[in-house]
Image (cartoon, rainbow, N blue to C red; front, side):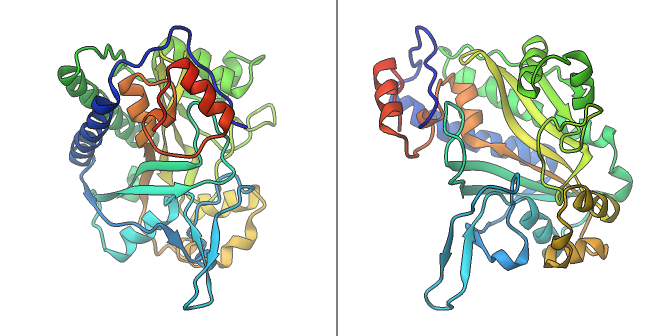
Length: 335
């Protein structure tokens, strides 16, 4: 059953008609601004991939992909969880030069996703990936890219406020950069999510860095697959969500693994069997370009900028009867 929270006194600011119009405006505007700041070109992307290639994102390693048999070929296909690895292969196949990248509309089905105000089994995001020089695999380059993305979001917010003055959007361009180890040191008695909430509430906008490896306590702040982000050069972009009263992750991103970090992280994660898959073989052989990339949640961004309480107000998905009843009673109009 989905978890549902209705903020006290919640009322939708925009009508259903205006909400639909605003969603389209946000998506077109943000795409244009983001692609300009990061030098990205739009490409077409797959809805499903061959499971034997290793291109599907396995998330935390326990989620079950939606898989089906193709009648004509008698082979199986998996609906993508994300395009984290496919994008880097695309940069390689399309011969993108250093300093240029791609973005795409990514639609995915995550059948095992928790369902609540900000999670749905339907995932829509802008997946992007950019070729970088090996010398740019450093924290400064990562932070500069994060700043460009945050500014693209804030520029989009400024434009949506001009069009819909009733929306009082309060997000900050000033980014608090903090590592997961620093968070553990600052808030040792709190859980990882509670640490994020405490920090983001104070800073309004934050980039939580270095996710995936074990902390000094021996615990992980959160899980990250070992074969796309470099755990020392990644993170999550978060904004404080006034409507829901907690931190809202908008983007997971990072500088991608090189041969050395992939080798180390596969062993740490107990995933050495992946070394024989096509993607991993090419990467370990040094044939794939150095890259930075991530995903930016489309519905999450629309929720934030339109001050919505539930992700079902900005995307069409499936919900249990109790959630639909609670939303109806609480003034939350699900699409």
